[in-house]
Image (cartoon, rainbow, N blue to C red; front, top):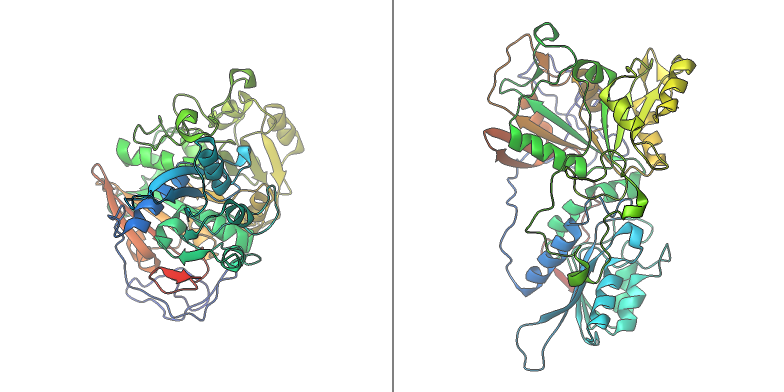
Length: 486
């Protein structure tokens, strides 16, 4: 399902009457409007137990892929596991495995093949479990489908097809032509979830946009300005929910907010995602995986803000902090500017997008402090949000996390530019005069009706609702059950 909007003129229009929801579906941003909408709320169950041997090994491959968060973009996160049947017919054994790290070039299949070779195992007759269809074209590397064929594998189990419309299915065709048995669709949805941003970007050439909002139990974003201390954040949710937000930042290429939030909260917007998970697979351990450790070396100097250090998981490029500031009102003494000034490396991790009337002198002052300033089209004092997304796409930003105030939340939703929502609810009540979740929307609870594939969870005392507004993936080309080809 590509959309979940119902509106008479624009998706997610201003709804004055909470008891009335128009029933005319519209497309937007290139999404088809002809599909029958599914309003059923689906509760997803993460970490389901595997049902068969293929799922066991595919889960391992998915774990490898998921551990490359922040290390694969702008490529997809892919994991691969190679298995072989012992001569005695006992349970298959893993002979090689790996995942793709962008800076190391090799795709997951190549990493796994090299590891098997380094361990002295033959791959002739082996089975390859791959979370994404092996590539069939020359890019930075040679086609992985060709490498698997040359390695003599007998079977390839693939979670999902490549979402790239130019090459989708071609890797499978190559494998079939070489008489390799192909099983498609094993743990497909889990594999797709890992690469939502890549799937969206490769089809639409704009970032996959996730709207995150921390809300009171009565659906408000923050107390009235008169009741707040200036330049200080107001925490609604507890530590567990805030840590989850850091993980969302870590999984994103960029985070975006508006100048109103900057002036009210003086945020940092850095990636403070915490220490490495002790339960990780060990893929990043060179002694166990055969891959180089992606940690920065001592000769590279200090990392730019938001990349690494004691408070962040590793990432190959800094979290790009994007501020929409039409008139360049951001203070030079703000935490955002101060942290950009202390960053090292060829690129700034702070991008301020302004309008045509912004002060050139202020832009120059920000540039001298390590801030990148760029101009995008504006109208009536407001920046064009499609132009903002286009500017980020030019920088290979596949995933964008919105941490905005009420006005920008409403603007992104009314213009049909958000793809996913993460709503965190605290037990606190803020009252009728507090700032609404999104300008023009009476309640986030009403907004939830437009979401599909909803997941509900809790972080300490706080509730979290996650759901999709657009499905970033093309429709599956096979039945829900895994399909054997060959």
